[in-house]
Image (cartoon, rainbow, N blue to C red; front, top):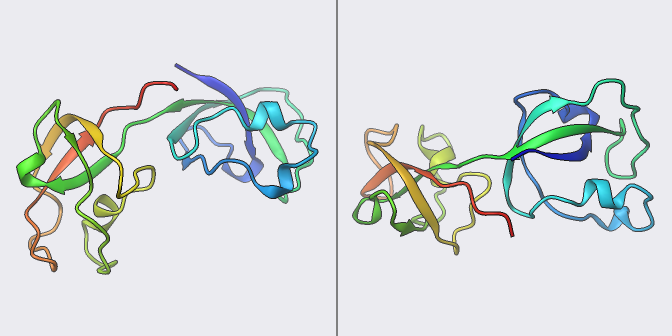
Length: 150
């Protein structure tokens, strides 16, 4: 389901993904608060379209202003401990990983999922991109379900 919101003009491109970070202290007193602050904090979204003919509005957070876009929540692909990796199960991430050059790092620490939360697995993809985990973890690549609206 798509939602109309305002995002920074630099990010306003169809297909762009971002994690909504919530309200900034700079949002206080802004006349566009209701249009900007209408997403779920910590959720990953994809821009599905940029509203045609809209104006770029001034913004204290985004230096090039904000524009109206349609967004939809998207799933997150992640590595989880293999013993938890089956469709329908709730799983959490294995924990932080300092090996940022590893081909699996973006799946071990994916944007849009916190280490202390559990998410329902929608699909199991199988082996992660790495050949060997430097932390000696047994991991499986999965797709988490898109969370229900709050």
